[in-house]
Length: 93
Image (cartoon, rainbow, N blue to C red; front, side, top):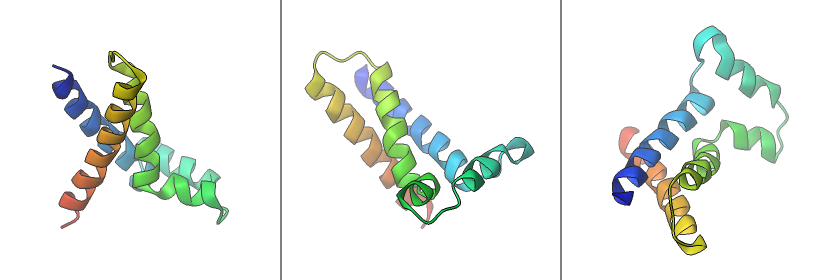
């Protein structure tokens, strides 16, 4: 059952990350969010990077899942973040 939730969390992290980094959103809300970080520093690049944003979103998704240990939490987190990268590379083909 945890595999199902991990897959769903990965898809959710991909969708939310894609919205935040590449879409305009309703009333340009996501575009305005990205425009707040206009400097060419690590934060400005990080807000526009799907892999960076989805890494932190996957952490939140993993925190929502019931895990037995800290090790399982990190495995879920990094696994979901990796799944986002795989989805992104598949979709961009």
